Length: 234
Length: 403
Image (cartoon, rainbow over all chains, first blue to last red; front, side, top):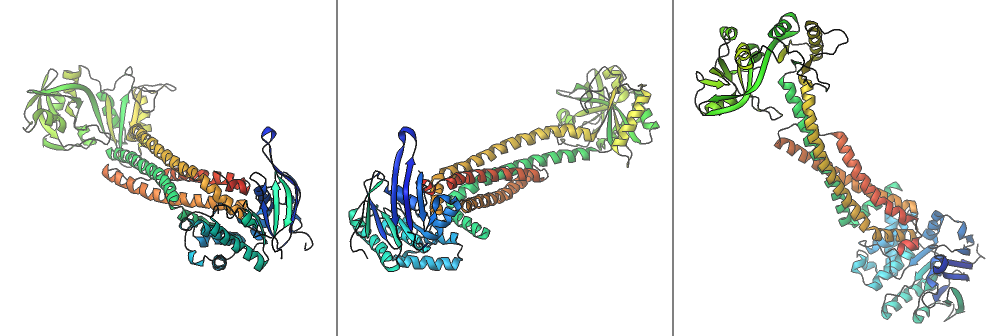
């Protein structure tokens, strides 16, 4: 398992619709990502970058191809097993935050731990410390509607982190934020990657944000066009 | 894990307070209305039955004719009874306490400028005794009057009020058809029966007077029989039937040409009417139930988008479809139970108040409570659960993007 790459996509194709309206969101994508990498995926809209992220996150299943996570063939897993995989290994950050409405930051962050079967006190403790990591412990009792976009996204990051995942998958995490907040978010993600070795795969269309990553994957028309190490690769 | 699921569901209920409130309201309206209305309706039915029993469970009525319909005497072709039939019934049957002959018609009673169309009843003092009539003023018939067929009469309270108003009727003369009739007595009012008919609207005269001067024949149209205490009406009916077949010489295999009816049958006939009333109330209540159900359905469908996204989020962070579904199911069940409970309490309360206002017994029906409860709960569960099930079967990303 240690010698297998963390994420290993081979000839992954994802087709939406059929016949004339068929859309090839992913077309024979080969991609490996190792433990501890901070990868940015860029590309014009419709290039399949979000689909790639969803496939990696087991939120969407490929039409064909082989996807191994930690050496495990994903296609062989049932829906419930995929849920377990997400529960224990993956964390998500979405462009639209996707927090539960009318639910405090603390309880939003606590959510993944409920399904991990932790006791209430353990959950709240972990949720508090995850909020602290994103600098929001003073906002724990606030509902999403009482938080700014940047704060909501940091809550979402805390939620992604709280279960100690191997990989955090972020789909345009700064898409709805201004530059200042975006940089704050990126610094949080970069810090997590540097300090804890957390693997991060992020989709973005902003080059400035991609610059925080160590590796840049450029997609066009469902294919990987460029794949390069950037910045100060550690 | 189940406990955890219940806690999750309770959290979700509190978090979505408005949605929860509206769902509960739908159940409350549906369950409450049905229970209140049916309770009142059933109370009326119970009241009718009780009143009929009060009329006398020891009373059996024998009428000529046989109708195909249960308990309905009709056919005029059958031979009428005679006074002799009545007296033989009374004298020869051990189980009969009193048998009173009755012959009656509708006619106008006139006094001065006042008149009233009423029941003119020819009978004797036995009827007053069997039917428990008390004399309010004056007296009942004397033997001589009965035997000679004198033109005297005893008034029911309604007739007295209509014809005489405030003045004393005893000693006055009223006219019925061509007969001038002296008023000798006045009966204590029994008031309206449960079924709304006025029990005091009649004029009594000696049977012989009636036969000679009103009817022009000697038919007895009904025998009003009071059975000895301790004899069941079923047994009494059977024995009277046998006796009547005998004196009317009805051969074996031939149909009865008379009807023996007890108050229970009268009650059955009348409770048919209250059943219609109850049915009507129930129909109105069903509409409420439906309205409540549609309310629940509405609020559930309106929140489908939000719920679908919530399910997407939960799936994304690692919930299994069954866990999410169980949460939604528990949520729906808890809301239905809360609503059902409040609905039952409110329904019974209003049913009780309604029963008080209408002066009928409070008669809640557990079956109806269960049906109303079950229906509302089913609506809540179906419309809460099935959209959730659909969402839980989607790819998480589809659910997240649901619009």
